[in-house]
Length: 401
Image (tube, rainbow, N blue to C red; front, top):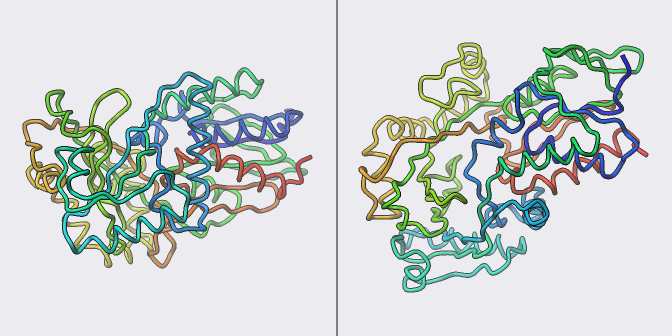
């Protein structure tokens, strides 16, 4: 069994982008991508809102901030080169009352520090010109925020790899990794694969895959987010993106309105504990996944801290009128009969043992393997920039020529 020079685990958008970047920088390396599913990007990469984030929210100087701004430019260039449609529809981050204006001003300062183009504060009259149906007393407008279908991006990346001679091996779920005579043997459901170096971008299973080579400092806790879709006659209520001012004391952003590149408008999501790492419906339960979450000390500490928030989110998850009431705070005209349930996504949230939610990108490496343990939003937007960062880290760690 001839070993590959490098094997990438995970054919989501980040794994494919990184394999593509490494192949471009080191064309003499033999590289393969292993994916447990029958196609690429079937989980987080294919279950997201499709927003091209501009970089407003993130702490200046963080990897998130730097890679988001860079990554959006690269993603739009990639879309142009591959004839993938995208639109800079713009985003309004709306303050509903005077009590949110301080946080809105802080966001403006962050966005300007991050180099977000065109960012500006607008008053009620201009807000209505941009989003006539939106509520609020003041808003931060990010005209460059956009939308795209990341599933199309994933397919284009996989095609690039195939045409470049980098195989994507589907149906290859990695079950174990063993070091033998300077080579790593990956036992997979599609047979053994040998590699000199390994990089994993395994998303919802990133902690488990990393744990195959060494103990990991974090655990993935899955959170499901459910959206409602506006019926066609109500789509005019949202021209672009209408977002809340985030509350820094809460772990999630809150509900918002998102125009999609196909013309649909999504409203949501909520954020509830997923009872399966790949549980996209309320009835999906994986007993092993759920027990693993409940036994993790970090989750129990998080639950004690945010139990009230969690209870409200769970209530809105099962009571449509409560969900609609929250949506109406931002778009008062929206009605329950204008909303159909679905779709849903699952967010891979990395938690430390002390219950702290890992906010930035996190990598671990041990000489001949490197693992992405946390790649939160805006990972899809930033994927090409993250890939460049990972390729540089891999070159240093693995001494790639």
